Amino acid sequence: MQSRPSFDQSELAVRRKVWLAFSELYLDNEAHYPSIADALASSPYSLETLRDILQDEVHPVVCFNLLSVAGEWAGFDEGVLSTRIVQRLSQPAWLRWLHVYPAMRGFVRAQWNKLEPLVIAARTST
Image 1: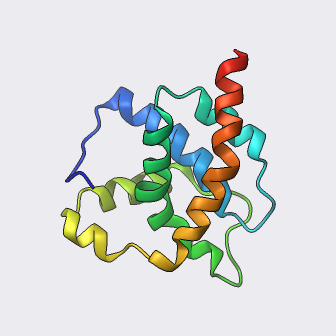
Image 2 (image 1 turned 135 degrees about the vertical axis):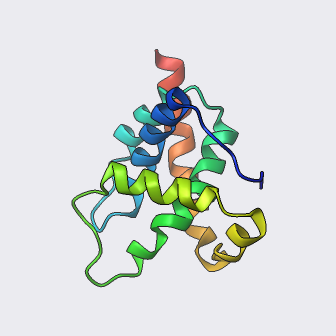
């Protein structure tokens, strides 16, 4: 895990689109994988970086929605989501590690296994 990444405004704008796309996996409704994959494919990030963003940036911030009886289903607010992720990333790496929930890593792996081939297909079809 890198310590305290910082983003300039253009990088942050690109990152927000990726964060928002990944956050759809954590809603209390059926994820539409092709549209999520299209959003990810249009980003400049490698597959490895996309997986890391899901695992280390988005998942720790929104994973609890999966455990909530009355979880978010309409979509996360982009501003709130971005603020929470940036705040978490500004913490020391050891503190961010404390908030990683290994029991839920299987969810990340399963979602990425569904998305990765779709992202590859979207990138090769354009």
